[in-house]
Picture 1: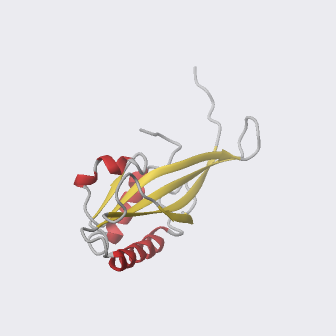
Picture 2: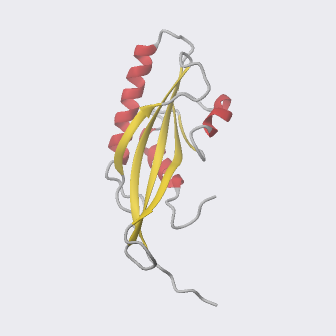
Picture 3: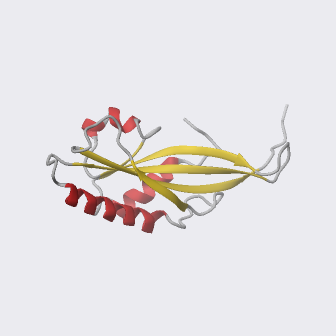
Length: 155
C-alpha cells in the first residue's frame, strides 16, 4: 500500500461512485494495476470502472531542497462485457458515454486540498488476455500534482 505523499486512489473511486453508479456504471473498483482486474474478472460487473495508479514522477530543480513536485497519473479502466460478438455498436456507445461521464466528473476536480485539480492526459484501447469480442476495455488517464517539501529529521 502506498502512503503519503501519494494521492489516495480511493478518492477517485468515491468521486466516480457518487457520480456514475448506478446510472452509467454498475460498479467502481480500485486495483493496483490494469492487469489486476483480469484476475478478478468473474466478480466484476459490466460496465465497470477500475481505478489504478499508473505513474508517479518527481520533477523540479535537481538536488535537495524545496521546489520539487510529484506528478501522479491514474488510469481509469472502463470494462464492458458482452456475450454477443457483433454488439460493437452498443459497446462503442457505452464506452463513449462512460468516457464523457468520466471527463465531466474528474476534469478539474480537486479531490484533496494538497493536490492540484485533475486534468485529462489521454486514453487508449486496452486488451488484457481476453478475446476482444467478449470484453472491451478502454483506459483514460488523469494527472494531478503536489509540491514536495523537505521535513526536518527528528532523532
